[in-house]
Image 1 (spheres, rainbow, N blue to C red):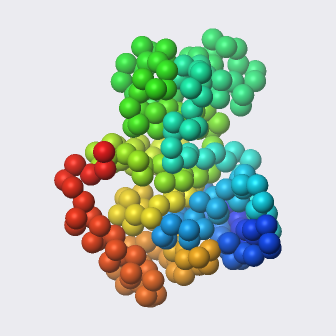
Image 2: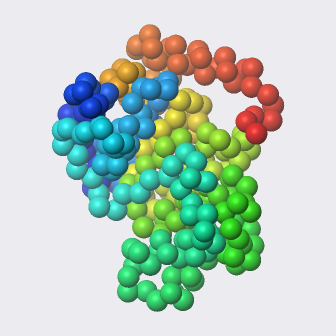
Amino acid sequence: MSGTVLELQGLRVLDAHGEPLVHGLDLNLRRGETLGFVGESGSGKSLTLRAILDILPDGLTREGRVTRSPRTAMIFQEPSLALNPTMRIGAFVARSWQLHHPGDSAAQSRTRALALLEQVGIARAAERMAAWPHELSGGMRQRVMIAATLATEPELLLCDEPTTALDVLVQAQILALLRGLVAERGLALVFVSHDLAVVSELCERILVLRDGEEVERGVLAEVLAAPRQEYTRELLTANLARRMTEPAGGRG
């Protein structure tokens, strides 16, 4: 795939005192490419995504150059906080479509919303158009959020640990859905996770962050097979230890 959809040059995120939380990150991503950001909590993964969209929390500022496709969308970790509890899911997705396709009528937007809900694997989608967010499982809510995101027809998709709160089976289903969307639509994807196993299911390349600084990057299979940095080796060991002790049912 050709066409750069994301370029970072010296990206920094500063706190209210001018102290850097993300240190001079450089990055180039083209359509169809998949990149995983990994690192422990506080490593700067999510802050980097928010800096890309310029939606940093109050008190934080962005420096450096960020060039991205205007068709960039983000899937957040907790769909319950992103969905509007006062809107039925069909109306929510239809509104997302109409915001980005103002020439379409309300009826056309609902038709597109139904098609998107079906595309992301929601069974009995026509019936569930009338459901409220609280009536759906966590996995279903995340599928609704993905449908609403696809309504923007993105070229670049940013994912901030969207499977963390899901059990292992549902997590695998969401990862398979995202994999299929990347293949079908030629999306560029940045996926944030502390879990190397999850990233390996979805991404071709990896960037390891620690305390807001790049530690290592490269082709994911090569980095996992022969990490050059001690911190990456520590992450691999910690991930393996956690998965060995995790209950068979995974997270509930």
